[in-house]
Length: 148
Image (cartoon, rainbow, N blue to C red; front, top):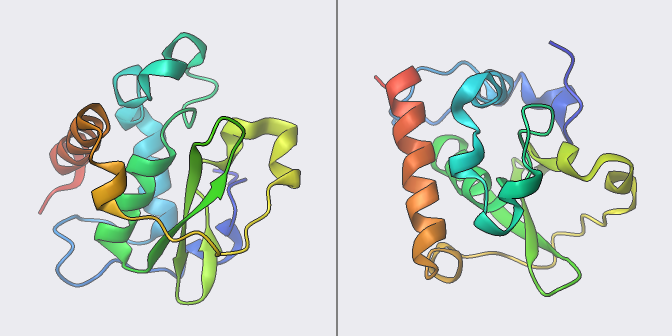
């Protein structure tokens, strides 16, 4: 598979935490599994569901994916403030930036500024019940596909 997400060049060397609970070899492996049917319209943020498609699977998946990546690979979650006041979330693991959902932005992706200045917390994001439920669904679907 050809990877286009931020950090894909080194993602094959990013290994899951020993106690992650998933049968995954690397961050690339997680991306493959998510792309193969785990990211779906039900895991997309409700306000973007009308625009979600199989050709843009990462749309509306950023925060729940970033926190799932943190569960499995460690690191920190940061955000890029977007118009409208929402944050686009990404991961920093071992000092490197990874954004599994950047492809949703198409050509606009090159203008995003990843400066690690806005740490994101689960408490803030998951205060929205629908977001927490989508995160749990994503985890459950991954557990079915690759749980230990």
